[in-house]
Amino acid sequence: MNGFIKTLFGDKRTLAVTALSILVTLAVLHSPVLLLAGLVLPLCLLAGAAYLAGH
Amino acid sequence: MTGILFATFLTASVEWVEAYTIILAVALSIGWRRALEAAGAALLALAALTAVGSFLLTRIHDLAILQFVIGVFLTLFGVRWLGKAVARGAGLKKLHDEDAEFAALQSRADIHDARAAWFIAFNGMLLEGLEVWLIVVALGVQTHHTVAAACAALLALGAVAAAGIALRKPLARVPENAIKFTVSAAVLSFGSYWILEALGYIWPLGDATLLALFAFYLLGGLALIRVYTAKLRATRAI
Image (cartoon, rainbow over all chains, first blue to last red):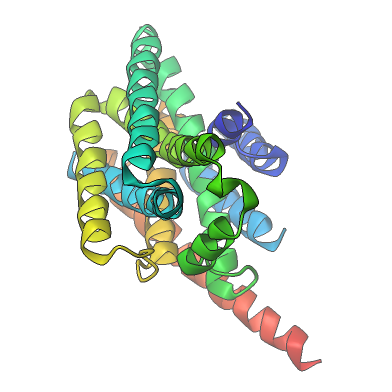
């Protein structure tokens, strides 16, 4: 069961990185610079991958 | 569709190679027949999970919700794999070594007990297969190509099994990290594309954006490997 949950959701850091990236993107989508959302999400996820690699 | 089949085939190849190492270690202990029985039982469980997962996801009739749910799962998977691949590429973590994994399995005391060994093979195949299951269901349901994605996964299983039968030793020369790196970039591309589309964002390049995203994650990941490698060298030099 643990393996199943970990495969679906990853660990706490992965969840936090993904949730934070989506929240930042949502904020950008509801701002005047909404067109930048297409750049913000990939950048946040790449930054998240960098964080996960270092931890 | 080609991208989806390619991503599924590569993901499945890496996972089946890891599963094969476990099955091989168990087979040398309790015999091929029992080890393959365990692997077959795990495959049946995975097939059932695929059917259930696909059924549940196809119950979601709102396309935006479906895209968002699948996008989030793919992103969770992709960002984890990209992080791991960068860490391994830069030398922050050891590369996955099938020979070492095989040796560790063979030194386990419980592998000589028929019942325990059967469960080692079953659990190994099931856990490695879960990531294949996730990719098959997520990519397949969203694009209505679940059967094709499952076939790509089975094709990868056939390729690994054929290589295993021919070599009868761990498949240590498979460039696992390079494959995981490529797959994570592909999976993240699909994930971020669908999340934003579900949130109402209109991609300026349409479907062609997927290629741009793939290139972005690949180049970004390579840049991260360079940064971390330089950082590691600098730390070692002190």
